[in-house]
Amino acid sequence: MLSRQIPSCMRRIVYSALVFFPLAACITPSVRALSIADTAQIHGFFSQAAMITSRNNFFGETENSVSLDFRELGINASWRPLSSLQFSMQGTARWAGEAATGSPRLDYGFLDYSAFSDPKTVAGIRLGRVINPFGFYNETRDVTFTRPSIILPQSIYFDRTRDLAFSADGLQLYATRSVDAGDFSLQFNTVLPRISDSVERALLGTSLPGELSGELGLGGRLLYQRDGGKVKLGVSGVGLSLGYDSTGTPSDLPGGSLNFNALYLSAEYSALKWTLTGEYALRNFKYYDFEPAIPNTDVTGDSGYVQLAYRFLERWEGMIRYDVLYTDRSDRNGEGFSELTGKPSFSRFAKDLTVGLRWDVTRYLMLRGEFHFIDGTGWLPSDDNADIFSTHRYWNLFALQLALRF
Image (cartoon, rainbow, N blue to C red; front, side, top):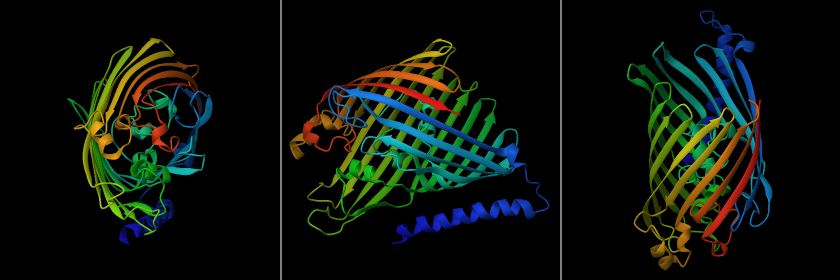
């Protein structure tokens, strides 16, 4: 019961803080409030994609048919009433096949208090709906201009569990330190995970009448940069525990629990015209007490990608990437899983060779295109492919995208 009460309590804490801090800034004579015009910012973005796949569906009915079901619309704002205090939030509407149908959502919304700051060190705390810090791209995965491609490497940044991965309700401690050897930044989260219907379907295989909820989880990242970001190295970790409350009806699963732990290693080197990026993940899933529908499972999988981006003209960039995912590193081809469950072996892995092209028409307008050659369905959204036995091992995906920002 306690874990269900925490979100509402936390919302009251955040609401009280949002009311209290601006008032305190106005009535405290020893602290000078800054001008709203000088410290408030509003930005937005919009993207529209067209997709077609040779087989399977991705973000809509794309199999042998052009789909316009993938689009994103967002507005973010920040305000700094004090030099040490900032409020930030972002609302989005996202369409991505059956997983997201355009319902408005709060992606993040938090207050950021900088407890210590000097020219070399900054340390503080963020409270509210904070962004989960892992890898290089999760914190900016929502903005098309900051992504390396239309579709992020799915071996690390699963779109089918986006709500769970992107942000969560809780607090984040952070610190940055600049020394002669480079710049270090550390972030640590203690949060309650966000569970949506698409997350439930991805983790449990279908949408169920019971409720999947999360306990307080942990996550963090240590990032090192040198020469203004020419060299970047990072290590991230996540630990989550989820519980399922069954309704006890014949159509429901038994009540069970799911534990997830992951380690991410990230590296990047940038030269004048090209950037080489690689990330690797080691992730462990444990399922308990879902039998007989889901056997007790302790599975460790790994995944990663290598990506090269080359800026051959001032506003043109080409990209090539090889991305691979194995759900179970002790059963990489999925044959053991298939023998046990009867489900396709290729649903346990995915290998994706991607080539892409980006054109920055202006600072605010971008066009992109990319082609994916895919072996396996390990990250295929179950929302768009309800029948796993109707999926195909080998498939291609072609996407075009227009993106605007202001």
